[in-house]
Length: 221
Image 1 (cartoon, helix red, strand yellow):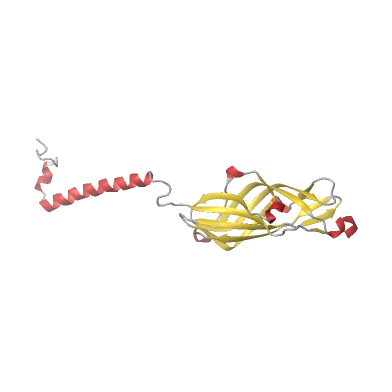
Image 2 (cartoon, one colour):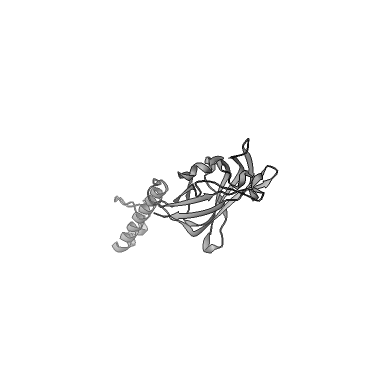
């Protein structure tokens, strides 16, 4: 027979080992079993246990309660230089964040919150409230910029009989982070984007949106 009759079922050649060697072999088998159990447990762990990602919240507010229409035309041609915008509807079709990557060498733009867009926001209403814009789970990294791609801007301006379309240079709003926003595993980082809209009347019914954008960071915590 090739095996002994005791409960360990060790090969016969192991019977030549001294007791200490056999113990080490048995402990090794036990260690392998424990290691396999730990790996399996980590693979099926709940997401709240040892989280590997952090949470990013992006919120939007307006910095100018009363919007002023700045004009390059004589006052008589543009509401005497003090036209108010009663609404500015901005339609966002893409939200991206730029990360610094490893040693600031592998950074790239990545879309976030793809299920929440397109999204249309009336900037005028944000003068008194803050709107949740985007929430995403990200790997730990440093965010250097946020970019919003805008498909249209429609405004109601006093003195105009109908809503007008505002042009937006490049069709994108890019907001640099200062200081940079940090994403840490298991923590939440909130970025507050402050949108201060300015409108330029270029004549012949043409209007351009030239916003001032700023961002502040809270967290990670």
